[in-house]
Length: 397
Ligand SMILES: Cc1ncc(COP(=O)(O)O)c(C=O)c1O
Image 1 (spheres, rainbow, N blue to C red):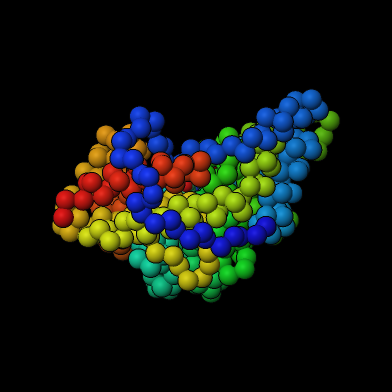
Image 2 (tube, rainbow, N blue to C red; image 1 turned 90 degrees about the vertical axis):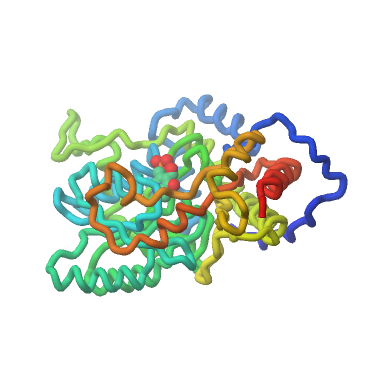
């Protein structure tokens, strides 16, 4: 696939901009259909192969492999299911530590916690908002001295920006700790010339309805290791041993993706290059139209690759902007515009009250000031202008 260069942002306000607010609600990141999904669904229905097996699944897995470069891909019912399978094939056991950045969605660690693992949350780097490799290096050294290394480290791509995977792999490689890449938000992002997540032992992708492309729900587990992926495939389909009757040497899951959703996913995946360019253009437009406001900043782009800007994330300094992140969110909401605070750090979630941490000030500061703006590629220029005008109006500096 090709990653198109970002478009030049249009000047703001645009010619002929009318200030009246339309009543249509603008959502954060709704699905953007191509128009070809219905025909793909009909073809699967006509074929009769609607179960979580068959040619539509094989085609989707091949398309994901071709897009990302991973050698082996398993389509799953969700990104969370893919993460669960990753932890299962790494044999995470009760009491094992699994480390992850605190600044992420709960699904990055939830399946491991459900398996009895103890999560430990490390802070993120302010330059990328992803796991801080320097902190990871230090914490791994200290853990090795204590004789209690983590059984896995989860690197997470955030808002379309790939984690600093090479540095994370180098830190973990020294102690032979496997890295799982939670690339649910990283589809289409790059590290150098390779796709986000490549190089990790296993990577999880998501085709959830709010993602850059969607299957209407679904995910994938990807790896270059055929043995791990074959084991995951076995577990994803109820761990059936080869026998004419039902025979099981382990308990598995019903984690296969429906062929109907796989067909939708294949159509959507073909549009990924266009969607990346469009998300980046939306980000550039917001930044060009809002950066002159006092106290406004945008998520930085890391130097090691090209992000997708899956969600445009903006920081608001209340003292300079004149109102805080929550006041801005409410102003947008009143204007019929959905926005959402950036990830609340996992150590601050009631469920992880007692979880051990390393640092956390960066994630806490991001949560205090960060807001995700509508970023769906189906948004019109007028939609974007409405968001921009509402934010400018909310600035009371
Ligand atoms: C960082 C992260 N990890 C995991 C997931 C889980 O993916 P899914 O919703 O497909 O289960 C998501 C998104 O939903 C996510 O944003």
